[in-house]
Image 1 (cartoon, rainbow, N blue to C red):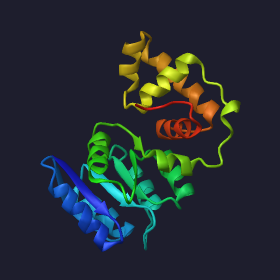
Image 2: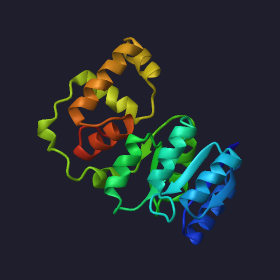
Image 3: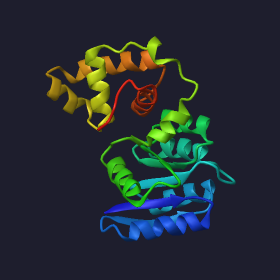
Length: 208
């Protein structure tokens, strides 16, 4: 059972998310919070498997909440609810290792799939968010990924881990991680989530 804590200052959105999760046999809402400070306290008390949080909230915003959760429980997956206006915070959340990025108008299936994927260690960023988050990125022509880097980044975007990618392409896991470091440097990013988001926005990779 996936135990979810919902942190958002909009009561209607919290209620709507609870209704969505009630339809899923494998997901249970263990608590809700109306601001980041309350969310942090409930995360400590309720020990959820995943936190679903807004970015803009009173008392303690989503980024500050993610930072503190990352310090206290670094392996706790966090999925971010956001709007098109949250460009800089989206980038900050990516750097802090958030596992999912959902627009608040996301449909039920997308929300459930992102929650389930985050528990498995997968990262999901809605393409619409990726385009906004990296709107000021360098033009595609300035970034030259090798065929092997392109292949690895595509598999990362599809949710595969380094060990699985290594087995698929016949190299060591260390080699895959070396390629990922090169990809990060070329794209000017710091994490898998950022790399996938930027590559999608620039059209460097495509997902089926």
